[in-house]
Amino acid sequence: MSAGLTLIPLENVDPALVDALLDRAFEPERKQRTAYKVREGTDWLPGLSFAAIDAEEHLVGTIQCWPVALNTPDGKAVPMIMVGPVAVLPEYQGLGYGQALMSAAIASLSPEAPLPQVMIGDPEYYGRFWGFSNVGTTGWQLPGPFEQHRLLVRCDNPAVLPREGTLGPWRR
Ligand SMILES: CC(C)(COP(=O)(O)OP(=O)(O)OC[C@H]1O[C@@H](n2cnc3c(N)ncnc32)[C@H](O)[C@@H]1OP(=O)(O)O)[C@@H](O)C(=O)NCCC(=O)NCCS
Image: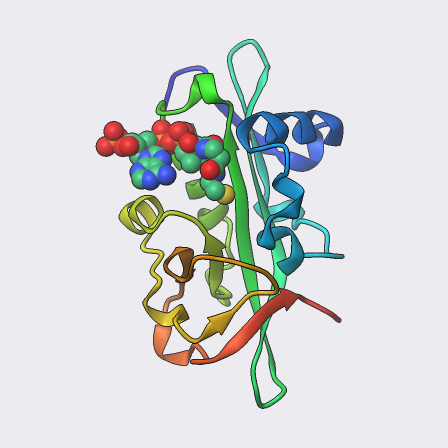
């Protein structure tokens, strides 16, 4: 990780700055993405969401995690944590900030009861560093278009994951 980088809780950052950063890291239509529909109506989880600040205290990256559920055909809602977006400003990419943000979120999961973590992303990146895989998600659906091979899950015991279901917001 680059010298001078600090990670702080995302709740300490002005939401308008986070929005501006996401606008720069993603395409302008980012809010049409299926990931936004999966977590619609939920709030990101403060204990699992972080910001990366450089030595001059500029916001350079963020990660947010959300409460979601896999709704199975037999009517169960299996709670999971949706990871993302993880975003680093273009001029700061490739310096290890993305890895630092992801590792901070993963390290903050409860070791006693870690929920499965899901995300939509490149299996090469998220598999290589954190063991995310698309193997268990072939029977899963999302509420919008998506590439099946980019739907990833990370779980201590993949055998407990339902084979089929649709991801959506966690509803109390
Ligand atoms: C994806 C992203 C968060 C990675 O953060 P980053 O700080 O640039 O990445 P890091 O510096 O931690 O990691 C760099 C390493 O990961 C690899 N890597 C980065 N993104 C990758 C990707 N999408 N697929 C495969 N490998 C990737 C790099 O090749 C590099 O490998 P190397 O060290 O062997 O050269 C960042 O590029 C980004 O914000 N992209 C735009 C938004 C986005 O697409 N987010 C992901 C979907 S939610």
